[in-house]
Length: 357
Image 1 (tube, rainbow, N blue to C red):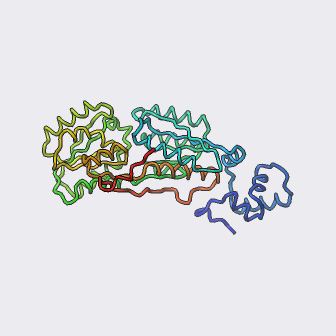
Image 2: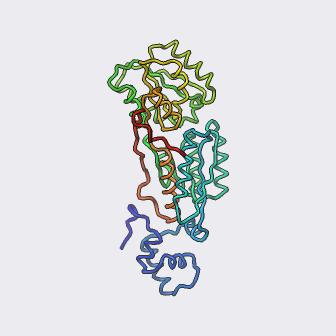
């Protein structure tokens, strides 16, 4: 049998099967542990050469220690925010790997500070984890970090967002552009829409950190194509200052009473819930993203009409479990890019959807 390297990366189990020996025997041959007949050594080495098998040093090291560490490099979060929910999925995914003791080391960076990301990245490289999971907040810094991981021989995975031309092992996330398009459709379907308020948090004004750009662009492209005369008004609110948020919204909608359609491309539509609650308008339509508990509370209260989401914890769960399996087996996942299905939540179908960590 000749391995097709474009479709299948040979593993130690392939070598063992072809050579007619146990996996442990192949391991002894590769790492010269002794106790194997010369004829068997020759046969195993012939199969290794024929299949093009390359030993995975991480897998070998872990096979003896039965434990490994996966470093998660993600933005700082508070309980109930997007990344707090995502992290619970990482922990559950690690626990699901029964054969090995998998530990998740969380490294938090300031999403407003690119140097914070770089410093945490250096810490991770120095700690020599078995694998790394991260997402894309600072695209240029992520490219630098990925190059350092490649040089160190540390496999990595993307969750939520990715950079397609990098050498990552696996990715799980929803298509951000399609999510934006779906949000735009839900906000405008069968309506003559002239104005939309696109609310962003202030840190997005920093062009180095704009994690929702692709989703936002998908939304805007749909509006431009289907409602060419529609005006999109952009306003910024602070993420942690409710009085200032209320004042900003009050000022804007006092000056633009014609704006009845509202969205936020990030996961924080709940930040405007207080304003919506205190200023009811039966003609208003609001669409948000992601199934955070506070978002679903706003949905159930009728302040938000729809949420476009995917199951955030499962996205993290799949990412870490697939990365760990790849590290242990030395075999690439069958599918590198994995798109989560998107769900449309309305108050009529949200009762059993919220993730309870």
